[in-house]
Image (cartoon, rainbow, N blue to C red):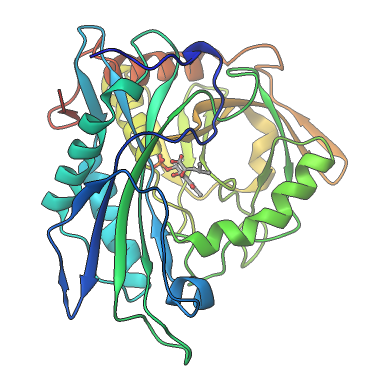
Length: 341
Ligand code: PLP
Ligand code: COI
């Protein structure tokens, strides 16, 4: 299979149209068989539920080329399960797990020419999503839905790759107590747009959101969970009902404990504690682990001891082990890698 002529080493996290995408429609209580199509446009009613009341959810995962030339995905079953949880919360029908996995396999295979080569630093980002497609004017769930999966080759989410980030404590919330912060609904990201635009204008890479109830505890950023390393080498991650249960974070906690023999804690993390942390990273499919060097709270700077030049040593080990598992250099736990080709 001849790869596309793309400058893999230098692409960023943007949309590059690929050949095929998967589409299935839900009508009269059932999903149709689903097809691969070259049509990258969506035609829906002007009154579609997604356009009026933001009834839309999505997922994000990646396909990797391994060192022995296979194409694999990483724990896609967890994306299927999380998408089902998102659907339930927004009164949408679930797309069955086995079909979700098969749809991803099909789209990746159909776009094999766009799967970045091993060692290029790029990956194929996969975006499954679903939205209410029929007219809805009173506030209620749609009756018809479309499920789609497209792919796009991507490089690092943050410009500068592994350079430590500077983030700020946000004055805006992205989630509400008992709201939708724990699911992957488009509305959570709409909520974060003003905050990210103003953060960028002020020279910050991302926002740290605190818990919306008390504003004393660390939650997450607009697109990634936090991992901290304490000065005595413990890996700590915030526990909260209003953050997205990151698959990367759950995997890294396993890696920290089982591969690196570190102590791990998932617990509430007070913002007060952050100044005493040795390392800080943002973890997610897009972010992988992006180190944080500085956190600014209304002008007050917290400089993380690992500094602004490179990742801290434990963050680096976590990064190397996780990407080693994803690219086939390190043996994966049972069931983590799905071989597509
Ligand atoms: N938190 C938010 C708000 C996200 O959008 C993402 C990205 O999916 C994550 C965390 C990381 O989740 P995952 O590791 O499953 O990609
Ligand atoms: C992902 O990591 O897959 C996400 O969906 C995060 C998004 C901000 C790009």
